[in-house]
Length: 375
Image (cartoon, rainbow, N blue to C red):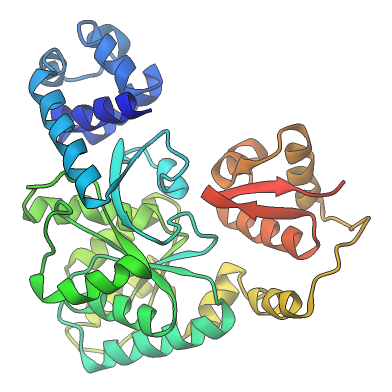
């Protein structure tokens, strides 16, 4: 695995802005080492590969040296590399056509938590936006005690979301637009430190990578892709939050937006998005959990507190039976594999697995994997 990680890191170094092509090669050949072994016939493997990238992939020496140096840096600083083939890689993100071939993670949270919500918006968060985030997070905690909150550690909505998540007892992960050798903005260093023990920091960039503008756009696809849903709190007519919600829609993620006063500059983007059916109107956590099908989390929490007695012969809905039959043939499958093999939407599968857990039929394992217990 260590060798595959080095080659995965080198591949991302070589391909850089050819995100989709690098991933297509990785998947077609079954790994980064295999891409290296085919470095001289890449055009035959993927005819659509650009001539520039074909030539770049013939010379791996510099990229491999850089990857080895980075591996030493990671070992010294407690950073975990997550190649696409790793169980620890965000399984929701793995479905996306431009997913990073490798990620770098430092923290304590499970980034494949059962519930993952990304909160995004303007860097000029108003008092209205801050109040929305506080009330949403506080109320969501009552409905769903186990949710991973994701954002980008930027000014405004991002840092407000992280800090409220921590104060509510949620784990929270910041997706960075630079390497893990720095924190940008530096004013958020203390919060980032707190997040390491109640969440973490995630990036696709090696150390010594600056927080350039283009990296923030690339970062947004990770924020969108690793979540079940994206919530837009405040946004001007143009902004990074709108880019993230657009990406999330392309990934078939649920998108929500809080409305704001007509004419308010930092509500204009939200209001337009809702008007154009790009996001569901959100007024609070109750709306959100109902739309997501998560409103039974409270029931499960109470049931767990009182002790769940598993049924010997539970009655299953047709779609639940479909999942049970799949797991009976091949147990311990990740949620994205269940989604593909059953042909059901991922949100539907998530809700069904939750119901099945309440019935004592399945048990969630690490890495977004589910284990069939009965029948």
